Image 1 (cartoon, one colour):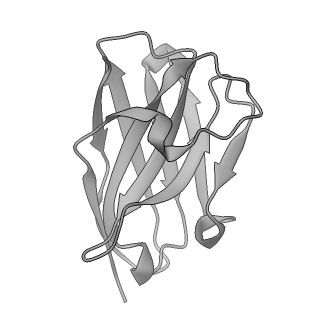
Image 2 (tube, rainbow, N blue to C red):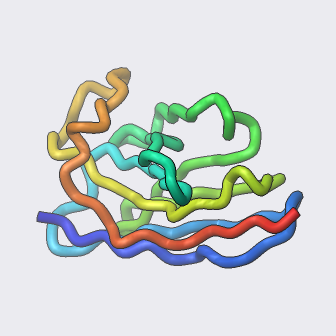
Length: 128
């Protein structure tokens, strides 16, 4: 089981930027797709972005395309979420998660139910 710890959240004005980090430990990080999700108050958790194990493919929910970038550094066992041009509707707790399957086919988008390890979350608040 991998342990995931998110950091980098905070309070930012609309139009600002934040970079979230998710550090993994306890198990091999390489070979596993990683994802970012978020949950706003009173709403269900939603998918934000995912990156395959090789870093060659990324997928984003429509509302963040062109503003957010997911990346990974396997040497540091870390996945990142660069968030630019933040909007008040991006306010949420952001979670990173790891695929349960190693070396999943790179072109396959990991279904949410296949993310088996989750971090504790980091709060992002965007003021208008």
